Image (cartoon, rainbow, N blue to C red; front, side, top):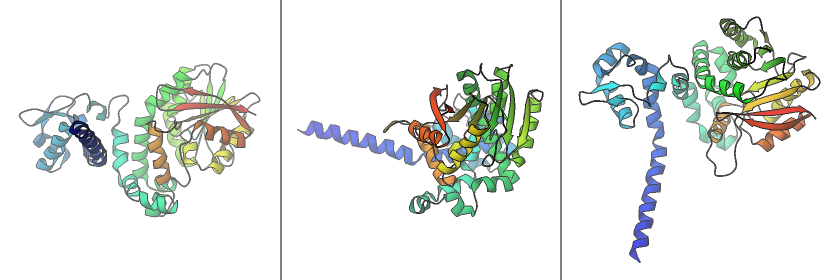
Length: 346
């Protein structure tokens, strides 16, 4: 009779240890943040260095830096040799800033004060339903980012680092052969438009963004050699979007909206598009119960950082589309956590 009890005790220990590993993850992520912020991976790309060399290059305290890197190496991020020298390994390589698919920008933004402090007020969001960001900073997160250039630069770099592979996946997954003109509503820095137009040389585009964002997008479109095929215009998507296109795409736009604003934005696209046009929403879709997915964590991010934004299930997107006189025709998966929700006029 004692053997099952011992087995149960062992299982309980395993579950407890697994839970504690999750609970302790913020400590590890803060250490990764330090390495990313200091550019340690870039300093190691030509070969191993000791903490004295790295501390001198980054102007930090030598022993403290050693302790951080020792901890990271213990979890497989960087590698430490017997001489206390550190080197890049497969896990640390994506922290290099000069590689396609770099996660350095995203790693940094996750632990900057304007993200970290609102997450520390998650209980306030649960108790009140109010954005934790609004509680901490007294204003909407998008307004705060727009008013603080240094924060905007960090945020933009993070979006570039996490979006490059996503945009490539979207351009490869969707068949744009029947689309001549596309409008990217809330097109950010132009990454998605660049990926789509590069993959589809028959197409032209209009990138529509807030006036304070669109100039940066225009520079990126020009740098990509696409200025003859893509114009950039400043808009308020809640008021109107450019008219007459075959398709309207929005990537990570609807997630930041409550239902009313989402329907309003989708409705503006519905009214602006050509007859037979389509609306393409690029978002993560929440799967069913007990299925792990990044969308379920980003949904909490929306709870904390926005006023009413959230991730949604397919059924919830169908309801939004219906409210905008659209009909979901299909959901196209991509080689990433994001999907493309396609809709036409109902």
